[in-house]
Image (cartoon, rainbow, N blue to C red; front, side, top):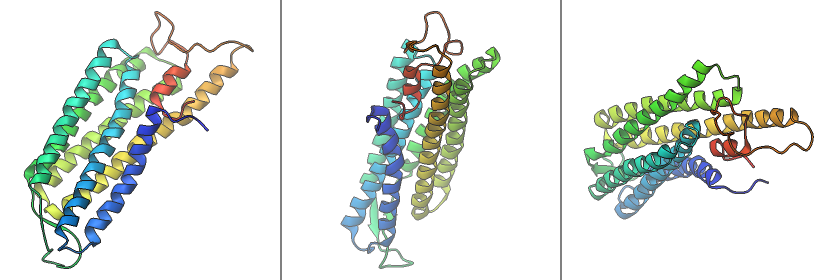
Length: 262
């Protein structure tokens, strides 16, 4: 059994918090509608799982973006600062939204389910921030990916890392844009359902990318090791003067892009 690393912890949090959030949403839809205190507590729990789950998935992909940039020293400082600024704004917006949230019996079914009556349009702000974040990260992934394909790199694993990252952020950009439109046009009681769907799609995409890279990473590492003479040590860092597309695969790079290395 491999050891529990920080990346693996973020992966597990992304994956299983979506399942927990689904259970919380079911509770919101089934508990008595006049349990206002309980509705507020369950809804706040749902928001916490939602934000932390999204944030964990973005941490994984942000670290992978840094790896694609060959662990550039400037990016090492810019990316964490950018992440903290965006997600601090999201937390503040969600906090304001929760303070203005009120519940009342659902006029369609007064006895079952929490029905939010007092809400704030600020709920769309976290989606705008996520849209901006994903747009920037998409550009950061697209730049080295374009250079990689121009260079004609023959490493299938490295090409998959770049390609999956670009596709991932493209999907999330579209998903965030759709949620902004839904938040501004749909009734408040339906926003919760669509938010859960988006959260699950986000988790599935992030975990699918990680597992796909893990699968091809193991194949690439096996092929790389089998091509070496016996007792040859595997270098764990990129050779000086070589780009990521020129250097051989290293366990250290693999550990950066997938939590299941080791």
